[in-house]
Image (cartoon, rainbow, N blue to C red):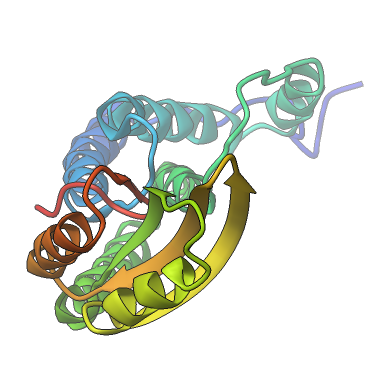
Length: 225
């Protein structure tokens, strides 16, 4: 019986349209990689993740272009993807957002929706740039301060430490305190507006408590671009 509905016969794929979509996708993927490298805030290796974006975009374009015109190929794709298992966890929500954006670009271009995809991509990029420009001056340095003060018999050592901290940082929150053999070991969560406050705080603590051990651990970004 002839297939009158033509459900399984794939429509011819235009090579010219495919090449145009791949070129546009390559450009958008390159821009997406630069955007992630420049404005991403994840702690992982951003260069390694950004390298994958062009592959995701171009692969998605190819898959959608092939299966969009054939019901049989679409069903076969669902069956093939059902056996795929990804073992690499996505630890940062921002990574997942960029990966989803890369897939969305590939889906849009693979479905020949070039202008909607371009408009949506430009709009999302504008939001990322505006957010980065607005939040850049407001960034602060959130640090963990670990201090070991040898002060046997001094019951007011913590009060003196708190006074020094209050005079140099924006906010102070004690997270841990250990006292053994006359040594006070305290951990504070502090917020500083600039690295100069960290230098001044270190000098004040060193001069007030000779022999004290002082260390800082960065909580957020380490290097500002």
